[in-house]
Length: 156
Image 1 (tube, helix red, strand yellow):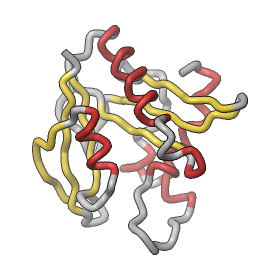
Image 2 (cartoon, helix red, strand yellow):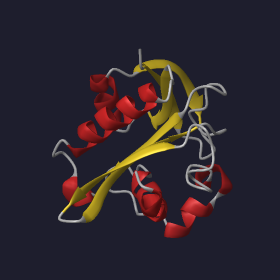
Image 3 (cartoon, one colour):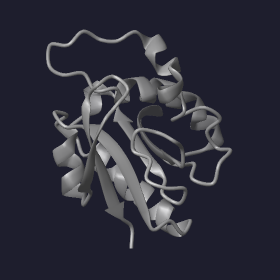
């Protein structure tokens, strides 16, 4: 991810919000809730800020990034937390897997040993993360009373 790509993170943060089937979309302004906005605020200024984007025909269609923040999937001060999103029309094409492969490589190069994430239990992405090698290490309730899994991926 180039510094000139950082501006897309707000849009991809919005697309990363999980909505169960038949749920109404949430207002875009939802991303500005402090517990959510921490995933993109001042990206590029902290040690764990690592990211990559996927482009199709010069359009960014996916982004994966990590930060060491007090987010939903916070583990400790040495473990970057993952966020990933692919635009709806580009999902289920392997783009997410490619993004994750690139991101894992970058994190290893920067000396990180693991990465964490939080995902709602009923989100089909749980299976995606498990296929990549993430393991469920705990359960939490988020600020919206959703039951989440805390997941960990060993980069070694």
